[in-house]
Image 1 (tube, rainbow, N blue to C red):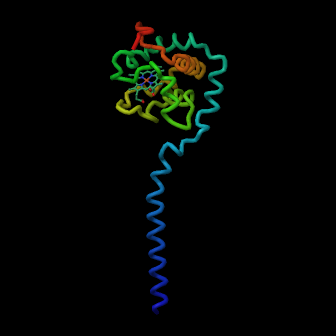
Image 2: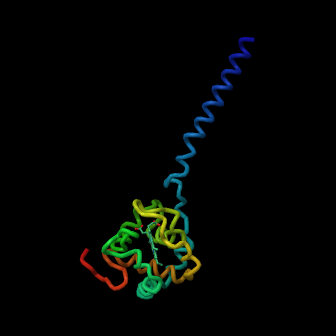
Image 3: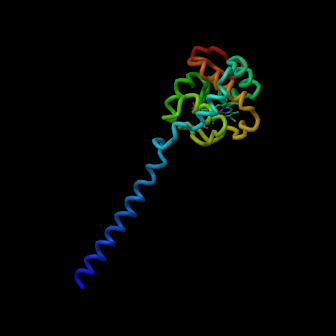
Length: 156
Ligand code: HEC
């Protein structure tokens, strides 16, 4: 009788530990360390082949990205100044190009701290894959560069 009771207690304690383990380990599984380094890797490699930087700049103007991504305010959306350098730090282990790709096709997937989920979510439909590649090529090419309508190469 006592043995059965002890065994039952052990089983209950075991279950409690198992539940606690699952409960505490699940949130960790959703942090950045679980991002698949291969995310978008194939797509990005394909769209960047031969992507023209100058055409990317023209597309950014045509699609009015600069309406929000103004360089002088940075309130509506983060400035594109230095975006290539920051992109690589945003979502490790994603590369800068992978992160930029995700930012364009799925802006809500990761929100830059301090900004709302205000970027149009339909650029994946409005732009072709090749166009997205050109935009990424341009953003990557501008470490200190600047985009935003008519303001270019500001000193900020
Ligand atoms: C209506 C405003 C708006 C427009 C238009 C817009 N964006 Fe954004 N974008 C945002 C906001 C707000 C964020 C920050 C929140 C987030 O991370 O999604 C953002 C974030 C980004 C980021 C990540 C920047 C970083 O510092 O990590 C990239 C890259 C980007 N946008 C590219 C583009 C491109 C390219 C276009 C045009 C094709 C565009 N955006 C058009 C509002 C906009």
